[in-house]
Length: 289
Image (cartoon, rainbow, N blue to C red; front, side, top):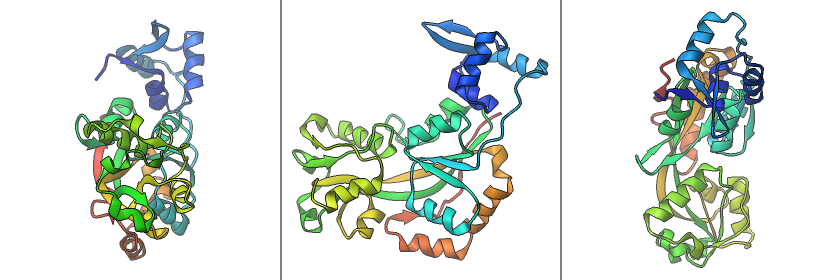
């Protein structure tokens, strides 16, 4: 563990927004130091402050919102379960930031770590080791190149994207993080790709190909099937849920889990192309706090 907490890590620990952390630091209520213009919070001093300061801010109740990356099966399950959770799907990195600021009780993510060839755990452990969270698996999903059906035979792999009009996602999206890591690992010059304007959702990216404004996108097998597009498989990725540990035992989340154990969800997952939920809710990280 590091000796100092960042602003976002302290916000996650206290379950308050980052701007409240800045207010506490400016007023001198919380121990902190500043290095090269960045606020840092000594871990031991923060622990002592929490233990001995009865005026420490109480943990604010989080809104019943699931943030982060979109997943078709997850969205369907939330709707069909009628559990009461709202959603704000944007991207994996956006979701982690919003989760750190207390904007939701859970966040979906599929972030690839090329150095360790793993998914999600390292990013979560680095940012939330001092916050009461748990990281559980939702599903494994097939991801690859989505093209017009008659063009699929012309794509052998990522190398085939050179010169093609490719729809990317925004930089914070897990799929874009993964694509750029795979391009580097294959020594493919990203500058050789004809990048189109970034799409802010997987569906928007596929529609650009469906309507002929782009040649390809890096998307999910399930969406390729839904839109009757060609699909060239590249990798199986793991989509996880980062959940506030306290919220796990609340009626809303328990209602969602109960539905996920139903035969109805199992049947629907089998209907979606490229999904594997064998290890659904397997724990991949449980913070030590």
